[in-house]
Every structure is written in C-alpha cells, then in structure tokens.
Image (cartoon, rainbow, N blue to C red; front, side):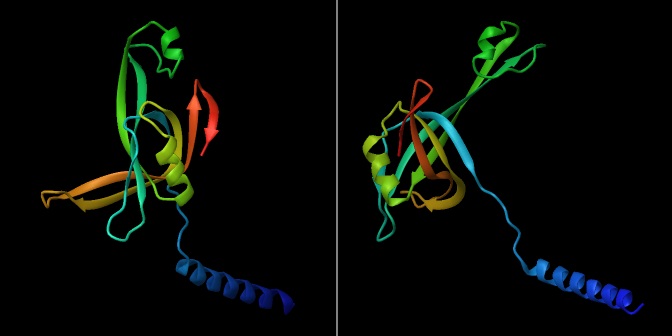
Length: 157
C-alpha cells in the first residue's frame, strides 16, 4: 500500500529532475559534407601571420537532370533515357585542408583535373580583401581526401 505512492512520488521527482538536467545539456547536431568532383586549380598553401597553414583548392561538382515529361534520372541513367532535354549545373566549392599530414600530402599530390572525394564540414566566414572590402566566404574544411581514377579508389590521403 505504501510502496505505490512512494514509487510514484519518486518517479515524478526523477522525471522533474531529469527534465531540468536535459534543458541544460546542449543539443547534438551534425555538419557533414561529402563531395565527389574534379579539382579546378592546383592547390596553394597559405599562412597568415602566425596562424595555422592551410592548403586551398577548388572542386567542381556536376548535377544533371532531365526536363520534360520523363522521370528524373541520375548519372548514366540519363544517357539511357532519350526523352526530354538534359540540363546540367556545375557548382564550385572552396576546399580548405588544415590537418597537418593531410594538408601537406594534398598540396603535394592533388593537381588540376584530379577526380577526388572529399569529406568534411561546411564553414561560413568573413575576410577583408586587398581593397579593404569585407567579403563573405563559404568553405569546406576537409577531414578526408580520397583520390579516384575511373570510378575506383586509387589512393587515400
């Protein structure tokens, strides 16, 4: 008889206490990007006044879709279905590599035209250009770079 009310009071206390603790805990989130494309320029290495050096290069990704009454396809399937017009869009991404080992190997081996797979996170920032104008910059901070050739993995950096 006494157990049940005591148990209910204890449950309500624990529930209230856990609600308070949960409200103080930060929510988990995810910032992950995966890109597969071709390098647009040879990488450059920069270092600004005592800050960490960085290897920077551009990466082009390409999207293709079919317009008209046919269903949307992807990749090689677009070539097999001749209905409708094929449209495409190339998007350029700025890739920054800060990790010391990855930064150096990327600078040494990545070249214009290389086909690579990049994993990392997206970052938004501001910088001041040569004319003292503030500019917005979006960059992918790479955690992993994989070199590809003809669709198969060739070398992982």
